[in-house]
Length: 226
Image 1: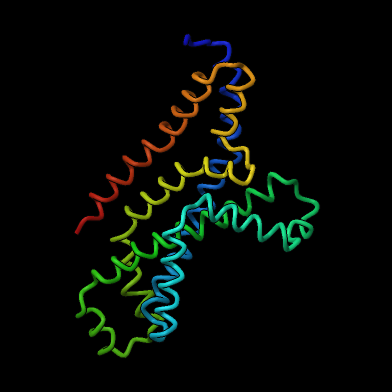
Image 2: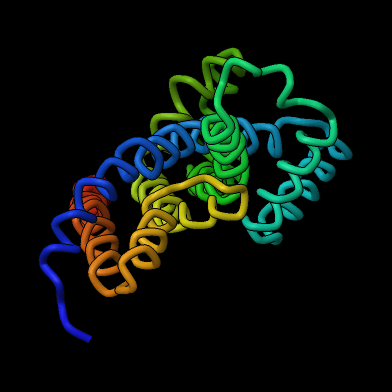
């Protein structure tokens, strides 16, 4: 196999566009959704009554232990069979599938982020909860002013690592026919009868986006260390 700079030059702008319009959007919106939902799940597991908390933990465990491609196909099939796509006739098929992908990625990774939040919440000294009770602080203020700042500080590096993991899992969107960067690389390779250029560029783009983020997370972890 030989490297063809002509193929590489033609492939790069197409793949960069797929990265910016699909891979990056899914990762950014999915990570934000996962962070918010994960916090909600973590608080729910602690504050809900026993049976409801156990049910929530059971559901989150099922989501966490099943693969993303299966979840993507399952949700896509349900949405299609229920006629959900007809509700968004003005949106093209690629965008509809991408929206479903963001939802699935957000919910899936929220279960992991919930565990990170839970670990951060559990790491807070029991005395802080007792002090808040002694001061008669309302539960909402206890969470907002005492628990959340410390829990988020302890879990932020972990949340960043889950966001990077989501970023690397975006090629699974192929399962619901979303043309993200790796799918575009495969198509270009098939059209040119040479895959090495397109897949190399895809790997370099992934590396260029994820490596600085990983360094930032490590730096942040050191700065936030107690």
